Image (cartoon, rainbow, N blue to C red; front, side):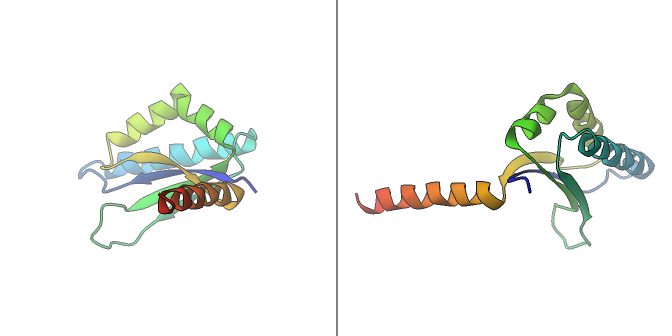
Length: 120
């Protein structure tokens, strides 16, 4: 299982753009499906959240190696997808994340730093 993740989150659909939002969502699922088929990512999981009064209404959790995820984020086609999504939903964003062994490495760094600061 891949240790690194990309979190792609979005908020409310811009009123009047619902049909476009559906089409872009389908394009995005196809994009990530192709990335998985090409071996660039391990997996992706789209999630829709029920209404809860917050800004985050859905996200995709994409698993892969940091190098491959970073390469995809630099790809003009990915940037085009994000730009298109930004015209139809509020609060679109991506952020790198850590899971499995990458999470363990990050926690070890945190523990080391906190111990160093506690000693001073």
